[in-house]
Image (cartoon, rainbow, N blue to C red):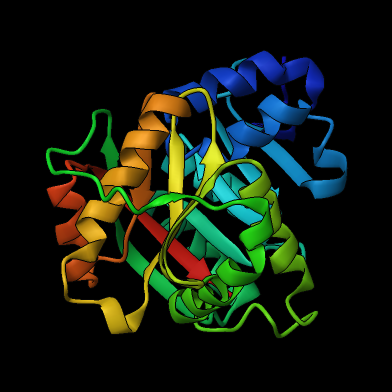
Amino acid sequence: MLTVPIRQLGESERATVERILDQDPYAGAQIAERVAAHGLNWWRSDGRIYGYGTGRRIESLCWSGAHLVPVCTTPAAVAAYADLLGAEPRICSSIIGRADAVLDLWERLGGHWGPARDVRPHQPLLVADREAPIAPDPEVRLVQPGEVDQLFPAAVAMYTEEVGVSPLVDDGGRGYKRRISELVRSKRAYARFVGDRVVFKAELAIVTRRTTQVQGVWVDPEFRGHGMAAGAMAAVLRDALRRVAPTVSLYVNDYNAPARRVYARCGFVPNGSFATVLF
């Protein structure tokens, strides 16, 4: 029998980890993608995954690495994770997941890790399992490997606008460009071009057997307000459902009313709320 309710998990407990991730395939998608690709051995270099539970049954998970991601937590689990993590220096660049767990974690950890650069307490989580009821834009397509240089400035503009800092700051953007190139090679990056200029972009940042999570949605400011985004997202949704996963999910800032209208037109429905704490 376990004598403590929280412990680090390893490959021998992979079935347990997958069981919990299946209980919330949207909040756990980031973890599920890595477990499917590498098992739990990857935690050795990329962080740690903790389980909380009484007796021998693990009830919830928390990944502590580049991000801090709680999955299927109760208030007691959050308190236990915070007690453990608050005794260590912060290593994550964000806390992300279901809003109740994230905000509870941050309330407990803020005194140890604060201040945060930004706290986004309500980000509606949206899910679609069928194609949009509007026509997809036929000009939106997968980006080809030879087009990364055209895509990259749009990706930088999106990141800077969304996150509030430029991805070029730390290493001149080399790491971020590798990530964009990887998404393109994996057929997970979409764009609409006008000549050599990207005027719409989106990526399937996470892919699991249960869902694919869209991130990085961006329209060139010059082209905003002209109705481009809805048809473009309908095209992304159609290809992702046909080719990649049975559902498409995303989360959006609650104050971004234009984006929320676009997603509603495409048939996305609410599935609770995320929150993000950015450092």
